[in-house]
Amino acid sequence: MEMFDTEVLEVTETQITEQKEKSIVVYNDDVNTFDFVIETLMRYCGHASEQAVQCTYLIHYKGKCAVKNGSYRSLKPICEALLESGLTAKIETN
Image (cartoon, rainbow, N blue to C red; front, side):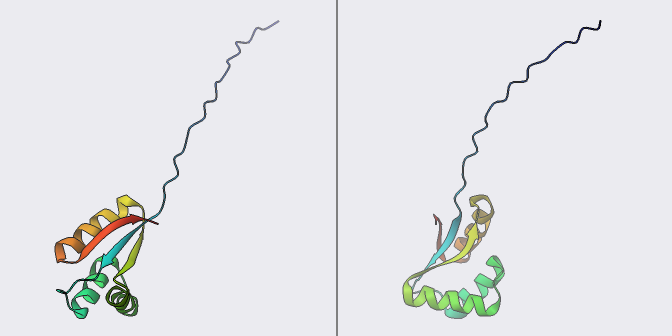
């Protein structure tokens, strides 16, 4: 008769932390022109012309607009580029 070694595998729960989606919010200012904001959103956020125009109007008339959604890691370099270009922006939790 053969003897088999029996291994007991211990299953441990791994806690997965839920990552909340974030947004880059751009705020209105009295410095940048509509054309500059539109071009900047197209360049750094990948917006089509129409989307950039709509966001720019929301920024102007509502005071702010969420221009890009995603993880903090993906948004950070985009937000930094917007800030370096002269826009007022920050990453916020949705």
